[in-house]
Image 1 (cartoon, helix red, strand yellow):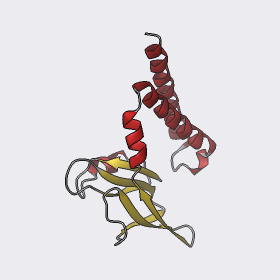
Image 2 (cartoon, helix red, strand yellow):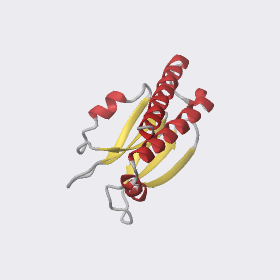
Image 3 (cartoon, rainbow, N blue to C red):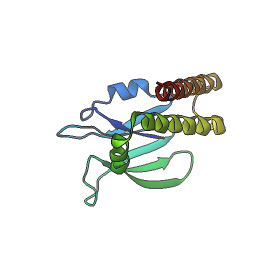
Image 4 (tube, rainbow, N blue to C red):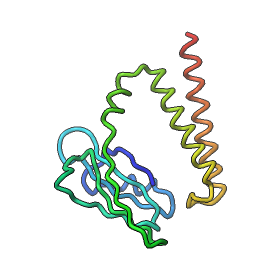
Length: 151
């Protein structure tokens, strides 16, 4: 499962659907007016995900979903709020700190996939290619920090 900010219009998830890995789908809540995006969740097709409405949460920055695992008899409800505080902090950070933050996220992503290879719905060579790309991007970004601080 993956949560992302989007800049898509209502029911306009063609681009997200095109980049979804095989065996995955996308569901989202766009921002209906003003600037900015909404939220989307990419999930494995073995899960049933439905958006829920709530009188308590009424913002494009939050999304309530009912998630049912079709392989088990369990239902989970999650409400995920948009990370406004993190975005405000990041927008005030230096370019070097933003790169360091991105590198940390990529390192964490790499470790997560490396540790749980069998959980990915992809073939082993697809996982390996993905990990190689993430590693290369991490190294390239790390070299930008080093070259930036030496100038």
